[in-house]
Length: 111
Length: 112
Image (cartoon, each protein chain N blue to C red):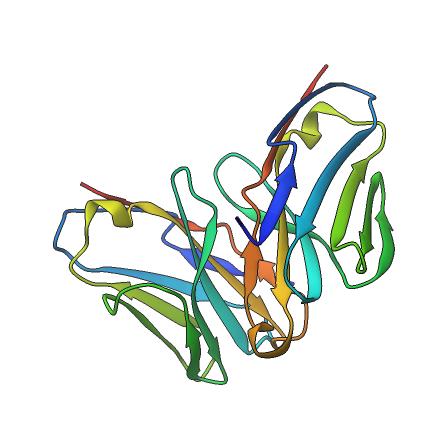
């Protein structure tokens, strides 16, 4: 079983829809990242959070440490949001130097 | 302010050759991380450099090595290239291991 599980693997939405991507992890962590990867490969860091909730524009990320679960929400989705969204956790203790990644969620937003 | 920059963007090598990939971190960042994203696989941790020293490495053979220079830029070297080394190699930097990492655009290495 992977340490970081994302769902769904693929998600297709119509422009304007509210999107939720989920991430569950099985290890103790010091922080969780949400990343965005467009075709071509470059990765953009969207959020780093260790508790609560963060908002940036139309993006909202939440984390529940007790339940080892995080969600990324996109409000009023737009075709330009189409990308792979990756959840990554930074381990606790001696593993807090590296990120462990989920396999990503491919989001396609149709006009 | 410039982000993390990687060069080259694309690299084609033949099996058995050596590849050198370069990464310039964000100014002021001393930690540099290398990750491999092979086709169909998730991102895998390769190497971590901090303050000029290799601090940790992932589960990769010794053919994968690198270094960090006094200006904190970094090189990743892959010797005796194999076909399965074809992947996107991403570099990230952070102020230190406890702070947010920022990624470069990657180098796509193709081994033929």
